Image (cartoon, rainbow, N blue to C red; front, top):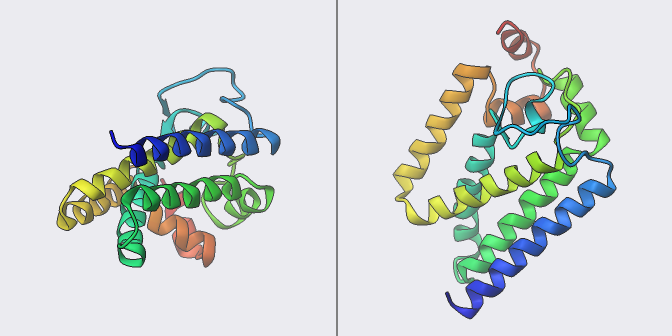
Length: 185
């Protein structure tokens, strides 16, 4: 492991700790308010409270997207720097996503009627899923990254009638027909 890689690893750990601290200061619960910890959060009120859930693939896809965007925008920069930039963006999204304004927006504009935000455990897992996606994109050919993204989108669409594409769409431009289709699950 090079010195740059060690520094990046320490910076990544620090970034996770800072994100957790900010989420704690925002009043986010460390684990599910139900008092239990599970590997997988089932669809329902505890979904975004457990270690992983049906939205974890979306965060993996963030990593794929961030890798390729960072490669396009900053290909002259060391991959460690691009990785940390992607982590920062994901951590900032997790903080924003758990703010009252975004939680309320999810409730009013998407199928997430009972959404109360993520536990800190789930947020850190979401950031970690992005990290895994970033590393996967670095190692895989482009076609494999695209295939994984499409596969995850189709899987979550089939299982929970939601995915990254619909989530962004409904957050930015809610559509009653999509909302009705999602609710029919």
